[in-house]
Length: 78
Image (cartoon, rainbow, N blue to C red; front, side, top):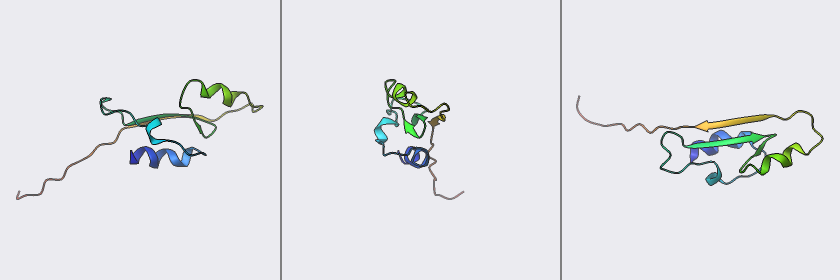
């Protein structure tokens, strides 16, 4: 969950729940994903139309897929 927080916090202008961007343990290979439009996290497909209702003509969008890996160091005699 830390990697999700560290990567997304600079990109999102509001607070967010880590559970909204963190995948379940059964989702092999991906630890988190997010869709961001105009520095707002899109939690559901209903969130996007509200962003596009503004008078802005250009919108910044990005997606973020995170995969972290834990490496275990084994101490011993080699």
